[in-house]
Image (tube, rainbow, N blue to C red; front, side, top):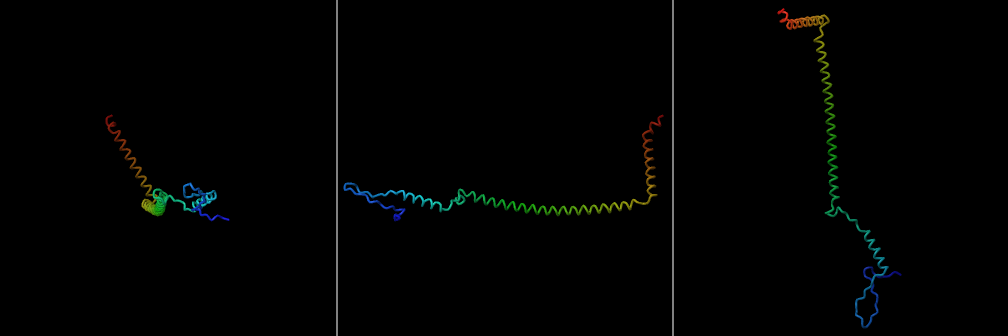
Length: 157
């Protein structure tokens, strides 16, 4: 049958009393069974304790601070990505506007070319006359240049 002794208060063993011995309070040493029971109980109590958390200690609250910094960094990165996306959309709109401007410039160049062609094109006979006049003018200029260079030397001889 199990012993009814308490873990905390071990029973005192009766000691034989001698008539000439001093009277001391009897002290009972724990037996092996008591030690085993105390060891098992203390291990069980330790296992049931909540684990210590370093973030709860003000000195070691670095993890909590790091977690906050990490969350703030994530928010900043998200905002950065949003700004980049908005910038990409704006750049795409700018590219589209530039493409439209280039198309408009091309149309303007084409209309200018057509206007120049209509202004300059005045028949084959007129073109032949313009070419003949240009050649005559070239011959006249060349003759004056040659006379200008050779003129003073030709007069001395």
